[in-house]
Length: 331
Image (cartoon, rainbow, N blue to C red):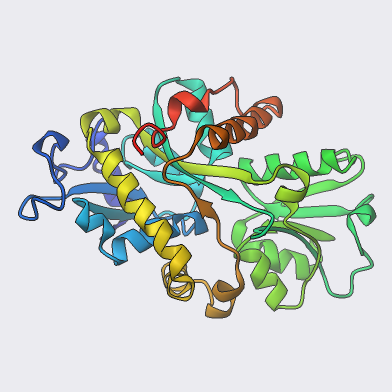
């Protein structure tokens, strides 16, 4: 089900819970009670590759089996999706830590996190690309050049971290240029910047058009491996009002992640159809790795990633992810 943003705004009175059709969690909705109404979850559909498990869980019946129903909000900008979540007009968002954790830093206790996603060295998602005729052959050639990337705090944060670790100052050594997500590949080939720091599926789109990679798996090679980039977030008010919501979500998403691992081709077909990605791009794009029940070591790695964002002033205050994440205590 998909509802436009205009309609969502009219529902702003529902700031503390799921939509009015959503039933209370204390009625025990699950697959054992098929006659009862499902819990409806309003989700911004940002077309982010990280949402794939939710698409799969919906299409393959995993949400329905767990007494859940997705109600999609058509919004492409992750920042706008977060604003809807804060305003009580969305119940769940899958996004980056740089996008969502400033909310928790400003108002501790406002979020619950689950289902973290990572990029690994074996499945590279991030690239630095140049035009096929570029004289730039390696990262060492970036000095005095411009580096493009897409708009938003997440990518800016990671781009600055990468440049710093490479020994470049911005803007003295390398000037960062941010453009709209949809314009980044066109900007590379149009000469708006000399190199492009991007992620899937845009990396594969550019490579399909002839771009050349000078660095693959940038974030895992330069920042950390695995590179924990984000997670699903649920407002604490929604989680408290629907105590069964997160356990149900985790069961559905865990099954969806396992399905993706076992049915790669079918999952990529869903990705292409739901995000509007070309089939050729969806087939070559690396996918993220999702974890429904993170262990202590994984939470420590996520904490390191979040601490790095704080040190780079992308998060106003320290955030303890161990107190935010649910899943490790539910396995």
